Amino acid sequence: MTTAAMATAAAPTAATSAPVETPTAAPFAPATDGLGGGGSGAVVSMVDELCFPSVGMGGAAALRGAKVTIVGCGSVGMACASSILATGLASTLVFADVDSKKMRGEVLDFTHGGAFYHANVKAAAPNYDGSEESDVIIITAGARQRPGESRLALVARNAAIFRSILPPLVSRSPNAILIIVSNPVDILTAIAARISGFPPGRVLGSGTYLDSSRLRVALASQLGVAPKSVHASILGEHGDSSVAVASMANVGGARFADIKMSETAWAALHARVVGAAKDVIELKGYTNWGVGAAVGALVGFILRDEKRVVPVSVSAKGTYDIEEDVFLSLPAVLGRGGVERVLRVPLSAAEHSKLHASAQALAEVARSVEL
Image 1: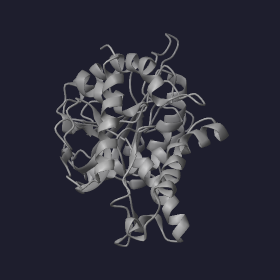
Image 2: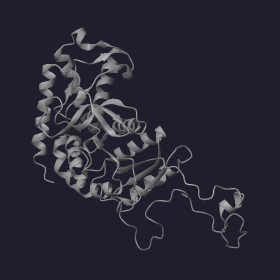
Image 3: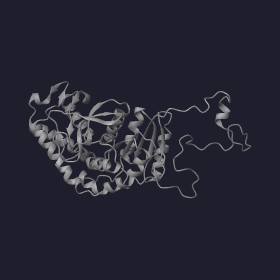
């Protein structure tokens, strides 16, 4: 993620003649004498040269496809972009970043692959012009997690960033769905909900969706089956107080609880999942591809109106007897309207207690954040 993330891109200097948004229609410099100028200096339009003048659709209005804006051109934001482009769902993908040079470079790099993608990739202006009418806005901007640093320790640094970037974004896309990826994701999702004023269903965090995938992968590797055949979820905080739900975990309907998997073995598996990000950070300095794949999937569930049930960070007050006004991961139904419902799933008494403890831990941190 970018460190100063998102006041957005800096304006070009006076000597720069090109507009702020990186040109996508003509990423390479055109010939100075046109197509048939014969060196005369006259610029001839490609359209005039290649198309019959009287056969066209005139001013026919085009249907607007899905538009996604990604705020933050760091490693996570670009992994999200790659995943979204691979789905082919978005017709326009807009990047925004305080580092205008890097942003333009990323846009240009993706634009060069335009023959393989199904979306136009553009850059937002310094005031977020160009992001108007986004269907989905993904926030990856923020301070990068340091090796050994708790996600909750990032709150103060990233809350200030959110206070600067969200108002101009939501004013330009008042009907968008916000997906928060920046850490600590649960606290920042709650902050985003308050700042944006959006209904709770239109603000969600990536939460424990990736954690749940890590759990499924770990279980699948032990069984020698595909991770997609394993159904297991981690709920609560995306962090140390998360809850690995052992009572419902199953492979093809066969519950792990029925084979009497010991609590010690399950706790060790959960600890591996909680520490997975730290392992990657120690090896390469950051995580990006896993979360990028997770966010790309979430965008697909929303734009395709799939009604897919996934654990993401949502407004939790009033669910599972949670009284705290917090966001944490619960099994949610995702569709075109965002979070449409939260499922009521049976938890064991111990899991229910741990979920409450997770909510209380998040509420304590949230109370320390000033808006």
